[in-house]
Amino acid sequence: MLYTVDLTKIDGDGAFPCPKCEAIISPDDETEEIYQIVDTKVEGDNLAELTIVCNKCGSTIRLVGFLLEV
Ligand SMILES: [Zn+2]
Image 1: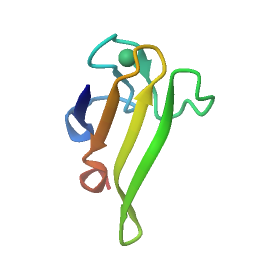
Image 2: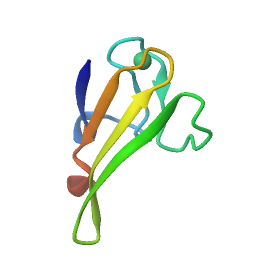
Image 3: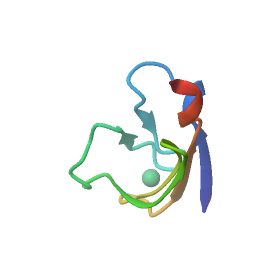
């Protein structure tokens, strides 16, 4: 399954529950225990999109909305 999460709709530090299994995915978590980054898309100097895979349920989650956070 592919889910899309818009980061501009997330409050706080940017952590959000996986849309399928609700594992908390935190952008500050760099251990790759919860998720792995599989693809990044950059526009200019800014991160535009990030594609991650939830390690718990295997869902692919596309993160958008980085540019609007700046
Ligand atoms: Zn999951």
